[in-house]
Amino acid sequence: MANRTHGTGSVTQRSEGTWSLRYYAPGEDGKYRQVRETIKGSQVKAEKELRARLSNLDQGAYVDKKKLAVRPFLDRFMAEYACNKALKTQQGYLQLINAYLGPNS
Image (cartoon, rainbow, N blue to C red):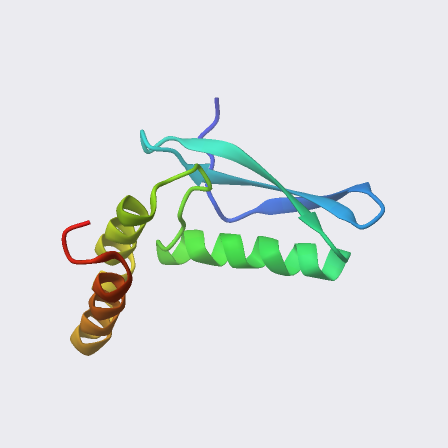
């Protein structure tokens, strides 16, 4: 398989008001795989969602859509996204996480 990058994707209509997004994203093993998502609404909304996914990939903020428990998701969020934010912002995120989940959940 050719080496895929995350710079491109496509939007195709499935049925009236339903759109399919297709793009490449890294899996748990680091290899890129094709991701497909269904978006309901207008074509403009679907294209906006695709741009958001590609932007997240470019910024390193992409989170796979696989089902993930809340705490592991937030741990990953803190390690991969929040680490690039100001210390005060990181502390605010942790305060909110601990307020809702508790520090040792």
